[in-house]
Length: 407
View 1 (cartoon, one colour):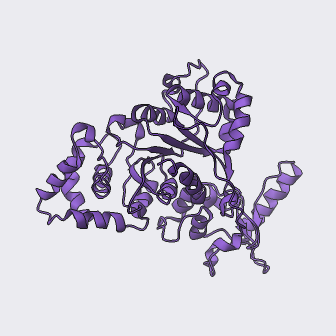
View 2 (tube, rainbow, N blue to C red):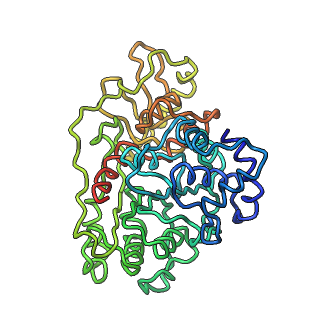
View 3 (cartoon, rainbow, N blue to C red):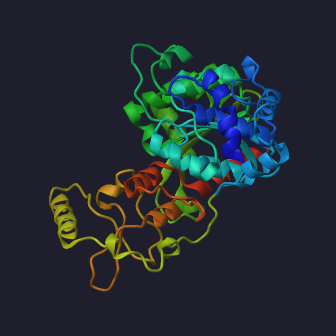
């Protein structure tokens, strides 16, 4: 039924699809809008739910709105809440890790965007929602109204030509697209996730520009305005360190540290209370499969290469090398997008004289807190890349629950 309905809506979607976005993205956004009674994309141009219903009813489809909505809500592995208490949009969405965290806190996703085609496919398989493509080509007026904007945005350097504390300072970067959407749509909250290195990126200048841009358009965070406007990058960095959370503090056996910038419209609240560590004990063995395929065990040549490089790095004083853990270890190193190459950052010691092994794709998913019903990419390389680029779902969920209290 959803796929038949999708075909019926395709001609209309082709009319409104922005450059860099497949019409399929509009079709499934529209179907989710019907299922959740939210705004369809391009509603500013008159594409409302009634138009979509009329289009479906006018086709040869034997149309039943209730049945269609039921299939959309329950026909995919990761289901949204039956009764959402707030709406959010998912930008730079990857495979939807942040979406899962916010849905688990009662949110309904009304729009998503992701440029990378393999991530789009995995996102669609799991959420039944095909992300829009090039965010730079998407008019902000067409994006549905929402309460929360979430984004795992890329870290890019900004020009040092000036610091006008306005949105024009960041033109030409992907962060500009987050800022223009915030400025136009005015959601009550936003959550921006990035690597811990954002704090020190370009000696703190990057973070300073980001925060001055966002406060200039009416948003606030836990860093005082006087520090953002008149403080040094070092002073901003000291406050920003309090926004860094560790995955292993939230039940995930991984030493992953990320900065989570929670923003709100000026006057809405005084400050945001970040979630405290759960105190749950973590153990690598909890995410391991019982009988992994022997293909994950390192070859003699690769294992010898890892040991040789670690020895040489030790001699050179670099201290870098492979990360070896056992099932009883508390946590692993951070999994990265390059894990597919040699698995060096996380190797499982088999403790029986055999060479260590890499994580399986399912173990990589569990290491980020994804549920076992999450459908993996058929490509091993893409699966490792996608989980390395993603977020730790339990951390996002903990933050989302704190935000959900305001709705």
